[in-house]
Image 1 (spheres, rainbow over the protein chains, first blue to last red):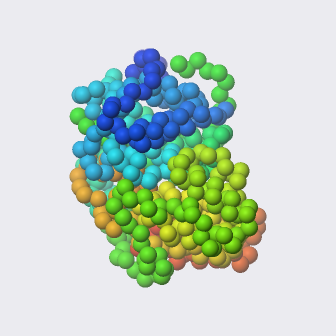
Image 2 (image 1 turned 180 degrees about the vertical axis):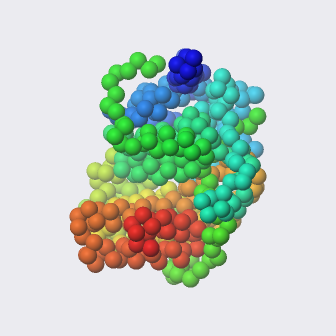
Image 3 (image 1 turned 30 degrees about the horizontal axis):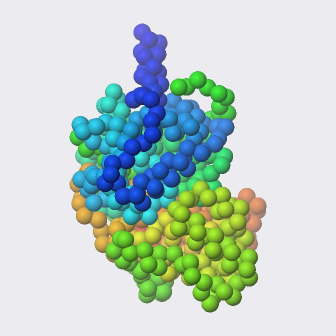
Length: 243
Length: 228
């Protein structure tokens, strides 16, 4: 029975790499998406579509497949078909998905170009959002940060940014496979394994990946991710049929 | 159901909030260039200055390439690694001037200058610049560094977390560069070299930064190095 359960779980996990898999089509932009924003997003996707590597961690392989441009392009393109302009309900948002409107549409805000994020950070945002498009996985909704949410010294975990207490807020994840987890795994693999990325991109990927990991609050999930990032576990990937 | 972009907020404990303290370098505050978004004037210098014109052509070319890459927003331009290396002290000075002249909200751009100087730390002048970055007051929002973002709900936390990392980007790049150089020197058995002491002192002094994230990182690094 345990073996059966494990097999079913593995099947569901691998299915997340195939989730929402439809034909990869050219990304459509609504008319109200400014040319500069469209160009930036197109350029960002073009960049990630050129990534080359011979290594990827096991979790990365489960979620995305290989650390490889065409893999990323297909992964994203099979989840997001169109892009529109929306405030996403917040002055701070960069992008969002609104599943009840269209689970395969990503909405971007003016902040995509107006906030001066490093390029790999922008890419990680849209990959994070693309993960939320997976309706069959409950859109990988975020977990509520625990109550209480305290550090090792017993003090409340608060946002340095706003001072708000995070306990009880829908701003955490408990699985490596959610949007925070998958974005972390993506970033860490770029940082560790991208063979044709600049030192800046790799350093940025590691920096933002480390920060993303802070949102994964389940100890086992975090431990699994840390183990995954250990360089000894990056394996050379032959042409795997993970499609 | 809104499912919104996010990244991790940096978590701060209530006991480690620090008021703005001493140690902010003069000059960093003197010419803070904040402007409403959309005003790109002065975001990065492309016109030659008298300082740049005094540089050898090879160094001028590097700075020109840098301006071009920053304009393109293509962080994966291979010239970052093939061309933008081995800066002369004078070229680094020109870059620190450009850093100061760049609008505070241009976090990636400012962080890029820090990155380029940080990967070639050679002397105390380089360290002094990186330390000055650490001692800057925190950028409160990507829209306007002088003003905190609106909204304090959980949704806002979910939405804005990656923004906080970017807001601290120059500082994070700086402290990582200092740490990396220290690691290199430790590995090379150069802990007794004067530069190592300068690096260590820079990290120690950054614990008095008004930026809580800098304090957090400095504390962690010193603990890891057993140099509290």
